Image 1 (tube, rainbow, N blue to C red):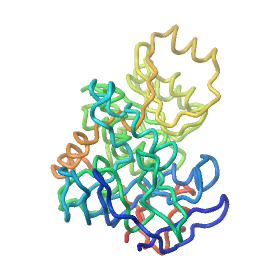
Image 2 (cartoon, helix red, strand yellow; image 1 turned 90 degrees about the vertical axis):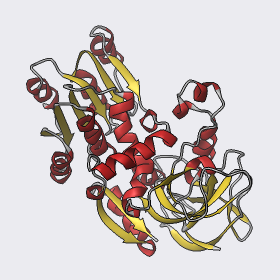
Image 3 (spheres, rainbow, N blue to C red; image 1 turned 90 degrees about the horizontal axis):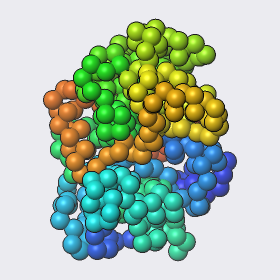
Image 4 (cartoon, rainbow, N blue to C red; image 1 turned 180 degrees about the vertical axis):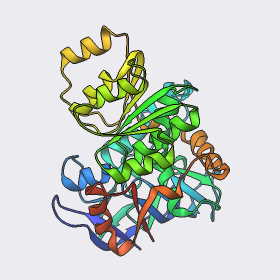
Length: 364
């Protein structure tokens, strides 16, 4: 038995309950979750904007300690500190063989059905199966995940900071470095400076961008973006395209990373990208006008890329991020702007829904 926060009905609060977590099967790992970040995807399900089957244990950005391993597991051992990843690729399919692990079909079962890759779940309450969000369910103090979803890290990384590596940091950093291909001397604009966008700012800085423009509606997030590497900040509004062009010699930015996910900001992202530049859509929503796409993309020779999980290969990129943190290049501790006890996980969700700070982390 373990304690988990159950989401059972749209609009209802999370319920703290004792649930049963099964023993690990072959290729599976039991993790005692000691920290979980609150991501806007969790909030989206909680608010009903993102449909999901219920009952469900939310949470997909977590870290903890390996408690047990199933048959055939050799990448982690009991006692290891691990980051949880919701993209556990198979390693053998067409995409994995092309080093495009983020496009592997195996994790799509975890993401769509919120189960293990075989369609089952390892959590239950009084005999009723409970689904695990993104195949993880880190709003539980113990979970069972595929071994590929548990990435061993140094125990020198504070556990609250480590949790962010599994989603917000990896996605934002990867959007700049992997998907956007930011190069030394580039001008980069980031629209939306929450947990993902702030790490896009960091990724751009580490990749060598010399002009990094952060755009957001919240002054405190823009202030944090400056600490993380932004050279300029702009308050979101109708005039941001002109402002970005003014800051980039009237050309526009080489790479624009859109994280806010609103139709108007998607259009702005494309418009503020220079001719021949790259727009990266991380949080893109519907409603982009066809005429705008044609005029601002086709006729200007721009590239628009979708970004899934920072185009990451987690077994390579999470250790890489840890090395950057240990060297002082990647700032993680500053991203944890509020911590909550597990019993207060509902308040943590509210904190995220209100767009406060960078990241709230729940500690077990």
